Image 1 (cartoon, rainbow, N blue to C red):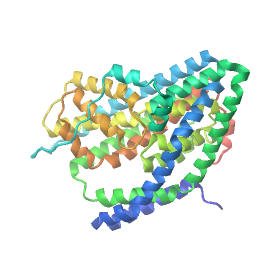
Image 2 (cartoon, one colour; image 1 turned 90 degrees about the vertical axis):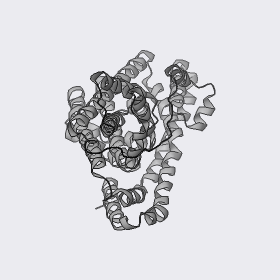
Image 3 (cartoon, rainbow, N blue to C red; image 1 turned 180 degrees about the vertical axis):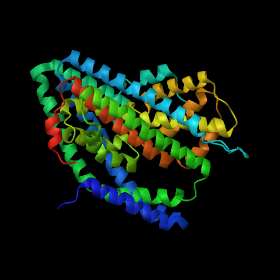
Image 4 (cartoon, one colour; image 1 turned 60 degrees about the horizontal axis):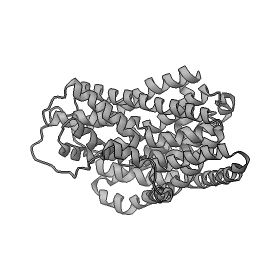
Length: 408
């Protein structure tokens, strides 16, 4: 019996954890000799992101056909994403207040970190529309790529017969990218092993208790958010058994956990939603690339926990108004957060600034950011899939029978 890819990935995870523990005394060995293979795997995945997102979004927008339907689907998608993000950061704040991860830890010495100022909101919104689409593609600016792809998709729809050759080209390009993705994913177990081993070697037994509480709060929040929010979404809007949903999305969740990249996991997420959950091509190729860029539930949850952690280690109390400000900032900032490793950490400085917390406190989070990134990226990807299922169901684009036939 042939072993499934998901099983191989989990074996890679477990072997990587064991190897990391063994190399805990010499983490530089894991970093120098094993880590580069993980970087190579990530580079392979990142290589296909721009052509995959660009082609799949064009096909997705054009496949929807009706412009009114495109606007309706887009509005519902963004609405779902913003609502779940707001709930996620609220859960993070609740857990931060209950667990008190920063209690018992006092900042005895000053630490410094270079702050990155967020651009003004108007500038961010204007930057969504590229002056030069090719420059946006070359630089990998996901928001600009999405904007240009949506314009092209809509234009192809309105062009009628004359637009079909262009649509066929991008449809073929998308299929080619899926084939390349399948090849790269066969290397995933080895890539996962190489990514996990240095993380465990560096952070395994050496994490301080307060930081361990931060990790626990984020992971508990990730589990609660997934069970409560995503189960409710697929049950209420798609009448789907939540267990079947989580089983179907598990390949994407496993890759997200190890790569820490929503965008990098996108090919697997699309495949899981199409083959395992029965989401149509038109919905999956539109909703999921959009979600990989603007849906950051796990990141928002992490920021709620970390903001309270920083406040607690400095002996500061956040008012209800300040915590509401965190919710708003994290929700709106998620739209501009690229789905790549480490982007959430940059976004954290925006949240801390919004409520006047010392940016130096975020330096403490940097040491465990990769561990936190695993949980928050997994939540991001599972959330994308839950919304895709809900949108497909409301648009009569969910083939439950087809999805249920596929072995997960």
